[in-house]
Length: 272
Ligand SMILES: [Cu+2]
Image (cartoon, rainbow, N blue to C red):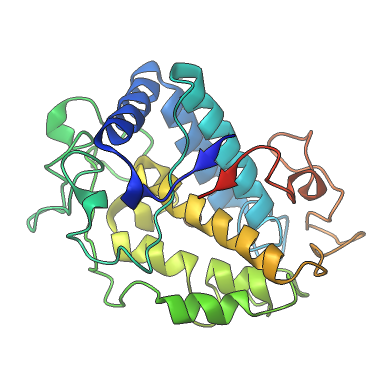
């Protein structure tokens, strides 16, 4: 069975396999297609108009499908590779093994935030930032530079305790689980982690940093955890909502999959 593991438990060989496959997708050009797609949705998802990937109920199923597509791309290169997740409530400092030179590389340097260690450092010659919002073509990070620390387990648990999936107006103003997990309201989980990493992770082209996938894999796991805690709480809204993906509406850009198709992840993968 396909199991997504905590990144902290990966063997050296598993880390190597993951980074090698990510680098191969980058070399072939497929990686940057994912960055382009994510940025297009960040730019077009708006609170008072059509919204699909972010600031809306479909934030969670949209990213679940996006991660599945990326994971399938990884597996087309090496069928043994699964996405790992980063539990940032536990591995919450710049000295975590996640940021080792044998995995994602470390913090950016002081002068220009450029990552200079690990396989994704610009000076490795294999990781140029091509889909970008300014002229800087090197991966940047400023771990912890945003001021606030990473969310705590108690903050995560306070959000997991919320029994209603989402609420009108189904955007960044909403109460309910989805918007608290996404972070526009309340203690702020997902958004705060993007800011904590800094660099490209704080922008619409955030998938330029491979940690994007590990962060969203943990967000996806938290959705699964929430479902187990609230087995009778449905995805909302059910039907007839303008500009918003209802339970059985198809989602762009795929147009062949609905939130209802994605509620149960267990046929595709499980979490260790
Ligand atoms: Cu994100």
